[in-house]
Image (cartoon, rainbow, N blue to C red; front, side, top):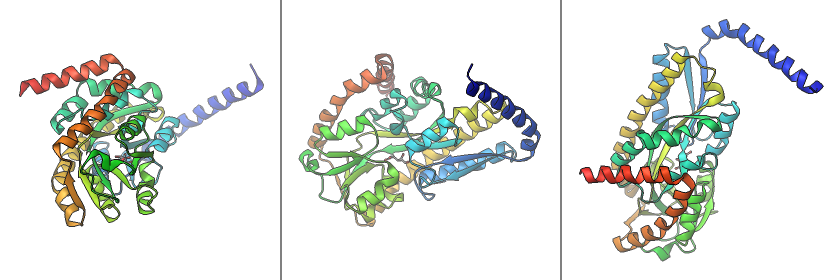
Length: 339
Ligand code: TK8
C-alpha cells in the first residue's frame, strides 16, 4: 500500500466520523436539494419545478427543501448530469435526448414518429419499457424518478417557410447534443449543428444558426418568436424530460426521504403533463398572434420526411438493443389494436 493510499483511507475514516457527528445538526437543518433546469421560471418546466418543491416541503414536513434553479443557471443539461454523477448537485430535470451519451437506451425516445399521441407516450413511458430505460441510468450514477412531458417537436427558422423537404437545404439548424438528432436532420438536408439549449437563444439572435426545433410551449416560453419568423408544424418526434437524482446523494437518504422524493415526483409529473397539454393547446394561436408565420408541412412532404427519418430507425434499434426495440413495437401495436 502506498503512503498516498494509506493517507486517503485515514482521511476517509476521519471524514465519516465527522459526518456521523454532524448527523444531529442535520436533523434540525432541512436537507437542501439543488434542482436545476434549463427553461425559465415562466415555462411549463418552471411551473412544475415549483409544484415539486412545494410537495417535497409538504410531505417532509419541512425537513427537505428543494431549491429550483432555472434558466440553466447551474449549467446545461449535460453539465448538470455530470454534476449529479459526481455528487456536486442533487437533482435536475432535462431532456432524455441529452442523456444518450451516458445511457444509449435513452435513444429510444429519439425515434422519429415513434408515438402518435400523448396517450401512447404516457403508456410507454410509465410502463415496463419506460421503467427499463430509466433503470439503465443507475449503473451510470443517476436515478431517474419520473418522465415529464416536453412534447411533440416542431420546426422554426428565420430564413423561409418550409413547405417542402428541399427548403431545409442550407438551413443551419440547431439540434440537441445527440447523434440521432444530428443524423436525422443531416439526412433531411439541413446543416445540423449540435448546441446546448442554454446557448440557443443567443445563437438564433446572432444568426449563428437559422433555426431550431422544440415543442410549441418552449417556442413560446423561451420567446423564440422574437427571433424566428417561420414555424412549420412537423410533430417529428415526442420528447420526454426526465427528473434525475444524483445516485451518490440518493444512496445516503433514508427510506422515508426516498419515498418523499418519489411521491412528490409523481405528483409533479401528473401536474406537469396536464399543464403542458393545456398550454400546448393554446400556444400555436398565441405564436401566430406574436407574428409567427405558421404552416403545416403538406401531407406528401410530411410523408417524404417520415420516409427519410425512419431510415435512422435501424440504427436506433441496434443501439438500444433488439429486445427493447421489439418490446416497444409490440406494446404500441397492442395499444393501437385495442381502439
Ligand atoms: C432544456 C432542454 C430543452 C430541449 C432542447 O434544458 O434542448 O431543445 O428540448 O427542453 O432540455
